[in-house]
Amino acid sequence: MLTRRQLAAARLVAQGLIAPHATALDAVTAHVAMQGQDLPGVIASTALRTPRPDPVEVLAELDAGRIVRSYPMRGTVFLMPSRDAVWVTQLCSAPSLRAAEARRRQLGLDEGALARAEETALEALADGPRSRPELFGVWEAAGLAPKGGRGYHMLFTLIARSTVCHGPWNGTDQDIALVSSWLPAGSDLAGRFDGERVPAVAELLLRYLSSHGPATIRDFAWWTKLGLAEIRAALPLVAGHLESDGAAEPSYWRAGLLDEVAALGRAVSRPLLLPGFDEFILGYQDRLFAMTRDQHDRLVPGNNGVFKKTVVQGAQVVGIWSRGGRPGRRSLEIEAFRPISAAGERALQRRFEEFPFVGQ
Image 1 (cartoon, rainbow, N blue to C red):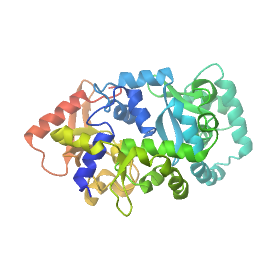
Image 2: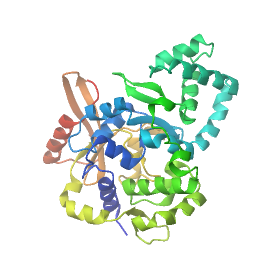
Image 3: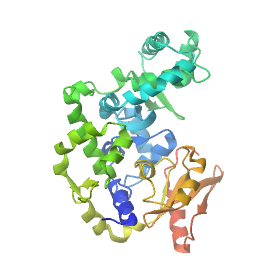
């Protein structure tokens, strides 16, 4: 059985935070989906998983249409490879779409309004991606009144139904693009898996456990909101590619991972600065492998779903950090959970100077 620190170290390595992926696209492809409601944060999370963290590479992949953001599961936006966005969304989005129905009624929206929103979006985006304000303006002109949360809900629904997606970077945000023209043809569930769910679940399960493991199938069920029966049916299709601890509720990880961790030695303990919604923290049902309960309460005050940026050292969260000062005079501000050595502080300052910030 792995100790808490050993588990955290293995997950850091699996996620590419210690031994990085070759490219930004490789990093996102390995993860399949990286939680992305903080767009600058997920751009940084991706860049940090490459040899020379640089947001420019990530933004170039967005502009080229190889990476997009979608709402595949949990009602949350994720950064994804374009070739995986549609089939994963079709596989996992049903629970969040059902959950959104009550909110839709509160907003005075019905299927007729959503149909009109889709029709006007298809027409407005036919010539290429447009910004969110531009799309909302089209909806306003069509009498769909996007203010007061209605526009967000209509956009969420069209993305979760794989009609549109968040596409190229426009300097401050992502434009909205049509799935039919922006994403690869044949990348839906029918095109990739002949419409069969269990092989698709198996593919998603293998990539989650390879990039997040050691983790359990309950971690995967929480991450995707897929049913355990369907996941258990898929597990035998990929178990031969994984290693396991053989526990009553086993954890699984990619073959050779623990040897990689051992070969990296002290590198797994090096100080890191991570964005607030990084998959190292948000990719698991239980986050206490990397911190204590009290520390978790400080990371997410009031358990309000807003995660602060983490300082990681020795494979454990040792504090939270922020970016102080003004453009051109930025500084690292740390709220430490425990004392950090002078050498550790110097290393964190270097991480701050190298951090892949988007904008000033």
